[in-house]
Image (cartoon, rainbow, N blue to C red; front, side, top):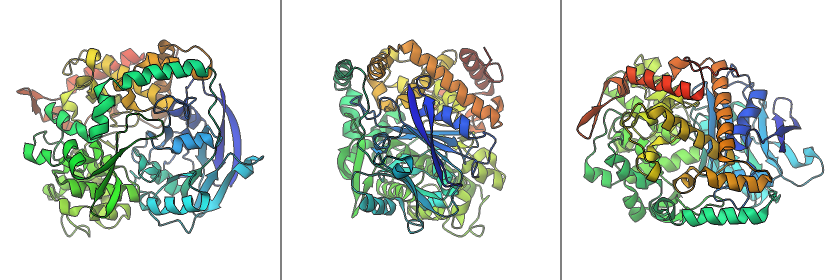
Length: 594
């Protein structure tokens, strides 16, 4: 299936098109990774002009398939030096495809701030895609930028933009679309900042072609029927959003606290930040991304401030991991993060690292300007968020991420990261398969890119697995990893996986492209994409040694079911050996040529 990728070279102010065969890569994550390998040297400086960032849609994007509106971005991460890979909901991915573009490659760097407009109107490529001056937008936050460009281009335009964090090359700066949706992890916003690229505005009316609409409608009807029957997708996520996981993850004993020192919480405090409390106290209404029947988004209000969220990960990383249980403070910090353009997972992980360094007296009040970062101190929000985005005083230290900060201070053990990426809100000591997912994720500690195995511990149904078993962990993690690759490459939401499986998506995908694709075919494609991501990282200098966990998880136990739980070094080696073997990689994690 041929698609056209638009190559935009900001150094030379040039735009051209290239044909790609998307069938081997599905679309989204897989296609973007394939294209990145052609346009980016994995050994390049991620904050240099030789880095590239690729956006890709899938054949499903914009169809009636449920949740088929997500876009995917791939780049070399300024935070980790590994491949960066993230996706976002909202409407930008769908509108990008409606603009007549299946993939966008941004190369080089402009001499001064610019933004890009893409439409499906115009006979020539230069009429449809334009690079425009953006000096008047530089310095403005995401919401201001979005409002200005929407007023200029019309309400049908969808805006992807960076805020001051991206401009100042905060290494975990996000790309924000539709104001509050984020391509969050790994620092894509810093890549835009390096390129002097403020925003990409897309608009258009192109319809996604479907080979067999009758069959597609039937397959979609079946999938939606199941999604309306399963509690997670029918009710739980709509009623409570992702914050509904707070109590559940705490019941599993893996809700982290104080930079992952332990997982113990005072129930009365935890109640103050639960999904139930969020819905009762600050929720205005639920919302949805394009084509989504689940409606997990939270439109919220604190006083005269409105926004979206906070999501589960934000509440945990900027809440319990900081030993803060103040929902209003967390929400205002979340609003600020969205406006300034930052990944709240890495932001919270870096703040917790700083708080531990203050506890250890490795950082003192006289070392940097700004407030001390202390566990339990909600008063630092949202001021500290603004300081980080502007690289002001203590904010400049935190802006480089937990690992660089900890290494600079000389206490690397305080950074809860894998490959330099801050760990999300699930303690790996509570499930070896999830620990392995963090270790082998191509992007570093990501609960999505390494496979969301935690879900099999509470929404697994007939697929539920014994979560403490080492010998089953590799296959569980690999399968979840592959499912995630397929979902990201089809441009659909991970939450659909609580209700429908790959057999449904194989039917839907086959209907759209007009060629029969089986679940086995999808799994083979996932293997191909996983291998390509691994090869990028190997060429970037990563090895088995980087597939590791912080020492805290290997030596400091948490208590679950009256037993001490760690992932020991022996466990780590067993997990990696088994995983590499299942992947058909050698013992060093290098794919074996066939």
